[in-house]
Image (tube, rainbow, N blue to C red):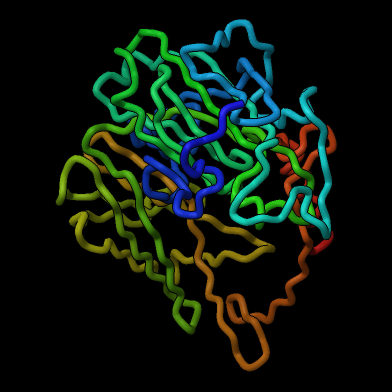
Length: 361
């Protein structure tokens, strides 16, 4: 075991991430309006990397050799998303009051379970000349990532997504690439994240590639306002672009039945605004969660998102939604499955939500 010559990333308060792209709204890029309005991610410019990966388990990151000394094809298989301690490596540990490791912030123990993941992949032929991004929806607790044995970056923050531009690291379209991910059970963030829950490290949410055109919409914000009479609403939209500073953005708002209500064009450096009149307005509530479809486009870049309209305010001691008092009933909910840990299947997530709705939570 060789000791690091400098503070490692996982114990360095000055390093939360390296080479990650700015955070953005959650959306998928589409190549056409029809695909975007389907809200079907299988029609998006996306390639899932979920499935079977190769895996190596070590009791410390200091034990793991350099990539050129590793032979991942000899490793065992592991399922992604998943927690390695529920797939035969290490053991789960529940921590409530006491920390499960010596308290010496920001340092964590050298005996820090480490899982190294590896797999091969290719990019689709029609992704040539696109910006290729690698996105992790959730990794516990910190990780480094390599493409073709070249380090791309680092991230921590278990419940936050992270995204990397890997375009320059990839081989030409059609050739085989490799991805390596080294996940650390503990990092300095574990002093916040390791209380009153199961300690289960691993890649526990989706991993996928995204293709963005060189000139495209890469982010947006939406703000909705409902007037005091609950009669009219306003939508405010701002966008972020890559490859160009100023461009015309097409904005559409469609009703809950996907019928076009409003369409307009605005400059990307401005705020796009749509006023929804009373005869077109249905308010969102927990009992009737009415959602509209918002479509943004520029060239061959299309993005869709669902939005709702509601008015939230305090009047005296009352919390009002759409003018009606609301009593909040909540639960301390953790994403957890008795077999898969934090890698909860979609069907179980949906069942949890239905159960909570049935009991007014």
